[in-house]
Image (cartoon, rainbow, N blue to C red; front, side, top):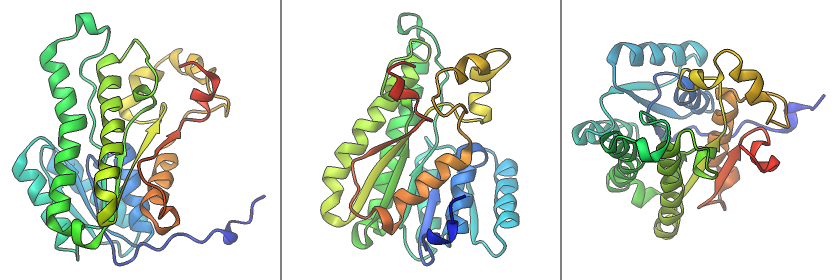
Length: 262
């Protein structure tokens, strides 16, 4: 058994983090992990009641955690400004995790509703850039910081099933590289995480019924991801241990893409 005492938990005390789309699933687990490591966190979500419940969940898991709920729609300019301002009020904007994502348009692109495709790109790509712009203007340009964009293995390899979503995540990965190049000189690191299937409500349809057994066959590690797997990767990418990593997309996929197929 590995002696975990040899690997101290990175210290994020004194840092303020904003995690979008964090009322449940991956976003909630990332916010919890950052709070566990000492960061003050601002969480966002569309509906106030579930978001308040998420804040209480973090406080229960991390006694004494500093958590602020900022409800609103990611696509709303005023909401983005308010969420970033809430993070800045905690001493600055040091960490931004763009986790909000939607996939309303499944199936072949030739059958895709273009309105749904536009909404997918607006939420998954444009809003992520807008949050980075807000954080930059709110002080991250002066203090430096770390941005993590939650992408997907679907942005690295075509699936044929969630084509518009995959294309949006590919754009997010490319955006990550552009931002890393542009923001590196002011001390802002920008990286992405590309998860495969993680056990969340978002992925429920992909593993319903017999689909889970079929999906598992493609994973060399023999299991699907858990939100904690992504949270720990995000915590690494925003911490000092990754201080010379930027423009990277970290695959957290149980070895799925190593097999050469999806």
